[in-house]
Amino acid sequence: MLLPLNHNYLFPFPSLKMTTKLFEDAPHEVRRLALFIHNFQKESDRGASLMAGSVIDEVLKEIIAGFLINKKESLRLLDGFNAPLGTFSSRILAAYCLGLVEKHEYKELEILRRIRNAFGHTWSDIDFSNPKISALVRQLPTKDTNLRSKYHNSVANLLGELIYRHHEVSQSRRKLKSWPKKYGFIKRNRKSKSET
Figure (tube, rainbow, N blue to C red):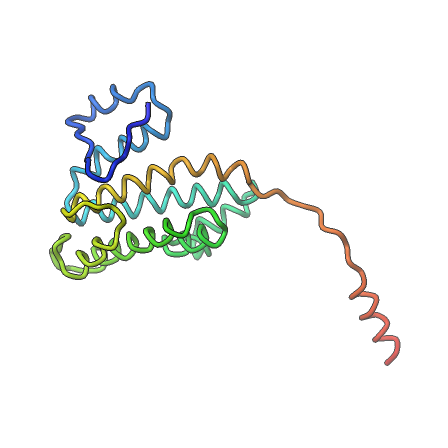
């Protein structure tokens, strides 16, 4: 059972018990999205932004990990101290450059990242009415006029796409490959040494 995500509707999940019962027979991805939306809607503007950034970051990590070779070295790219793909920003860029997200999704992810950073890097008590944040929210693709609805629906729509993307991407997982050996350079290099 997949609920449609449209641009003008926030899911009314009055309780976690109802949400769990409503989606108990649904695929894992639907249950995961429903639980996220249930908790997401209860957050303050700052909390919603930080929560969305964190969850989307984790989903991007799963997508990239599902694409890379299935070796522990791949996970070292994504996790651990100084992991090259250990930040939200680097994961967004990598997912786009590897062709794992579409251009419009990349742009939306960048906007969500900037909103998350605006909330996360200030001591002030701010919300979506802050001029810097409201200007970013207005760039999101949904047609809502209410900033909070626009933000929530954009996140829900994008996250719904990304949660399923992992399965699609894993069908194209990279595999270790034996590459043809090219000895021409080595021969030339040896030849030039003997000539000198």
